[in-house]
Length: 403
Image (cartoon, rainbow, N blue to C red):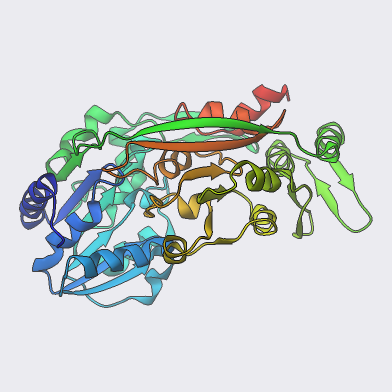
């Protein structure tokens, strides 16, 4: 029989009090601590609830709703489908709310929520409220008319008060940098509407062990990468690989070192199956969750391994699961996996910290994550940045390669 843990019950009581008083609540609980069950329990007193999440997490949310035997009316959709709902909802729950945090301009999903649902009560759920910058707070709260920053018409007005103007250099010139916001200056505006909890407080004893495995790629792969670095263009009979800017060179090398490439035409192909074959041989007999970066990497994986992208099929069959890093890093429980294997690595520090924790549960003591890096490739350089909570940027790339 399903029941909430003691700390979850306390969170429901405190969260309900906050929501009753302020009409907006932030549940800043680390991954796997049960944010979904807490929010659904709080939602019981509402008549009509909208739950917005990532597409791959929808089935998990619906399963939690059934497990807890809830009966209130709920609509569970992904963020990309927000334009389809115009009904009035008593409560809107935004899962992984940091996906609303782009700045200085709001994302389309943020605009949709603000335009059509701003008068609803809001629960914002995330394990990483401010993953990269304190400036990410404004638009998460902006979706509600009860935002503690409601007196500021837009991000720019807000930043003038709470931020520090800076400039940064990008490939196309010098631009304004709005990322600098002092945490102490904004804390008092949102701490009264926030409940927070860590895995350690919840009783998790899990440890994550990371292993970096080097894969010797086909010699042709290294020849291709070296030629591109030297000439910035490779012309074939039908296709062209062009790296005429620093950003494009960084992206093309990121692809090539793991065995794929996207051509200037938009077509793409698998160049080298070395990583896929390595996974097949090294992890024989293991049930795997495999994260990949580029779509052609999935084709390489599927050419040698029986995989699915459906969490229910993964949980109930012998198939491995293969997920794109960004779409699979949040809201999915991969505890059925023996290991997480990264075919490639993302430039984002958020992707690193969230996706590696997908196997963690309160009853699981040890989790093992494997990173597959091409010997001499770009992946190890990206890894050093993201594990220190820094995105791998063009500036990082230029420093590493002396460009």
